[in-house]
Image 1 (cartoon, rainbow, N blue to C red):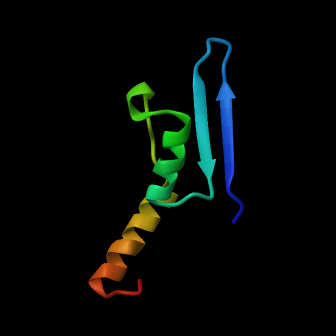
Image 2 (image 1 turned 90 degrees about the horizontal axis):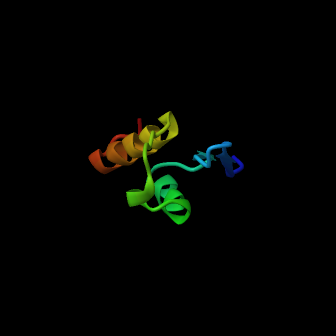
Length: 65
């Protein structure tokens, strides 16, 4: 899957960053390059983030899921 970063800045100067194709904690690392945690007003993780984390947990537990 292709990785895409979309940054939108509205007329009031508020920025939105959308990351596609990044999974798990790798997504958070990329976002940190654009906006440090203390500068963020809101952050939402997509389903891909949780799917990657769940897969890691299952692998640690010995399940292929």
